[in-house]
Length: 464
Image (cartoon, rainbow, N blue to C red):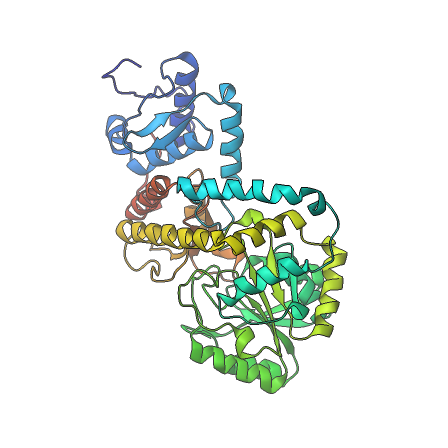
């Protein structure tokens, strides 16, 4: 495109939604040479004025073009045309990897060049052990990896021993092994009414029923748990008490003590999913330390360091149960990857894990500040130390409509249906602020969302 000219798409198919037609026009102009790699596109508001349409539609069109690998957002230049996908296979594959994880809740990726270099260097450091790391190792982890795990858990105020610690290939595997051991098919497991979707899948696989307990602002109602436990209807309680997925709520200490008192009174075993427990700088004491004789504590690394590690540290109440759970882990996965375990242990021993966690916390806080600046007040809580938001929708929007509207954006939106146990899920969705999206891409997605809230569906026109 000649310098000084402004791109205006030529729409050939007016039967399509406007955002798709604009993305198609962009792809066509890139093929014909009307647009070239590096060309800057008009701002969303400028193109909306040129075409006489809503800026939200243009934002959605640019999001669709980004999803196809046609454009990218750059600092200082706005949205620019990328190298055509067919000429840039490596970039396309990388972009595909970025896009496939948007329904998952991922921490923001490190952007500091020095930190990234240290992470790459750690792979070279464990390379000297590569032959031994290619061998089978004992289920539950090596002595060295368990020692590193215990040092890591101590940062969260959790004390245990190697005899009751197991290293599992991810939180999901650990929860599957624990619930498979302590609950029989047909039994009921109590939990929050809005809970981690993975526990629903695990319960279905094991033939367990989930009972959502009444809640208030502090978490589950201890009296509701007592009513079920008193009758023998429930012997197991699953909780995600710190920065809960998806609501971001954290159960305060007083409520934790009340829940533990009920569990002790009726012999209810607690499965504590502490996936996000390392994110707060001053998290409440883990349930495992309040009731170690009842609690199976699962602390994964996916949300604090990176999902690709697929590693979780599982603490059992006593040695006999540890052996039984280890047997189930062995049946399901043989062992956690020795390579992954060695890498995590190296990060812990060298202090790199602490630096990655600090970077995740800092970037998450920066993105929450952007959300506070961009989104309408009152839709979500922004004081929780998390990298996801639980957004309750304003009038005029439904969760299905907003999730569809967010497709192609850099931030993943997931409707409440997958989290809610009730037949009438709330009009809400989880929005991940992390993943592969840059801070600039995150801001643009949040601006897109905020603009949508200002224009409910009844007032949005997709026609040109």
